[in-house]
Length: 389
Image (cartoon, rainbow, N blue to C red; front, side, top):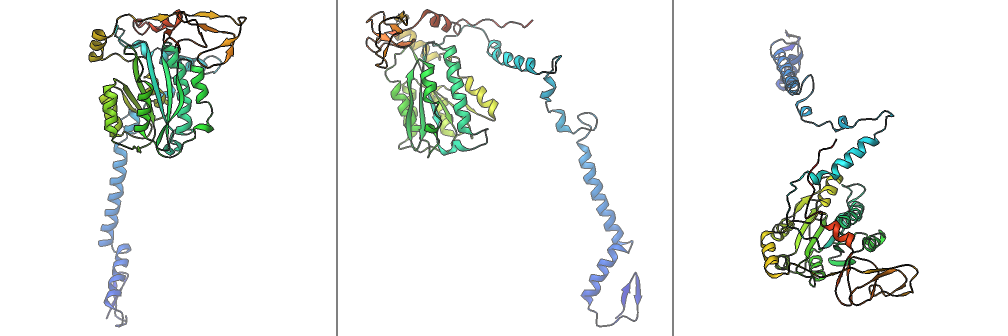
């Protein structure tokens, strides 16, 4: 049998060479030496390379110049930062902070009926899911940091309100801070990080039942709100959670959820049925924004406004206390049962209270100060948006 070498037939080739080896040799040899099949394959490969190169270049030129198309829609946020004469960015940072504070003033300044006496329960997820580090430094640390900032800002805009704190871990609801109108007491309750370490699974139903029990005695003229910081994708409940959702609707409790992982249908249904808001935090900055959107008092719903106008009184009784100086005689306070000199005297029963605003533990009168009452009215009569000069 003859053998082909370099495109020619060799008559001296041995006949013991198999046909398969000849075919393999021909295929390998033709790919590189013959201009027929090999050249066609080479040209085909070259054409594929040109096609790939052309497809890569198709995205260029649409955004201008040699940039890609996706670069045209990308916002170069760092271009908005301007340095001052000394090369500092302090002025730009202050400008960003001032614009974020004025953001709520750019909304519609029309007067809306709102509840200025608010009672809110903050539910914080303390399950194992809060150990994830998709939010820096971790979901748990960031939630505690923003919760402290939320409490300070909330009392600054709602001086007549009260907040309580409940944690969710190990399948139960854990009371962390009693409902109080003093932000310092609440900040001390969540100051120790080691006592709040995440553990186990959360129970949304048990936490909601505990929050409902804390607000069962509240009067009808005050709002009942629950804000949930939820980082897990599951909830370990002892019973049907939809019964708890119906109970929240019956008690007129507005529930809002800030999810750190993803949207859960039970959380979405809870917010939709109670009239609250549901948000999923995309990053650290967005987490703070959606949480601080819950600081201003929400507008009353039409059904709630009609019920309040038809059943509740238009006027409510408040007491303005007498402030005791530090040089007064020491005596027990009724709120903490400690001996102290300074404090406030209830105008009705003359017992000593530590801080205002609060409800008297003896006669039940709401004790407020005139500056707190005046500061609460800026939500009812918002200031019109102004143009910066």
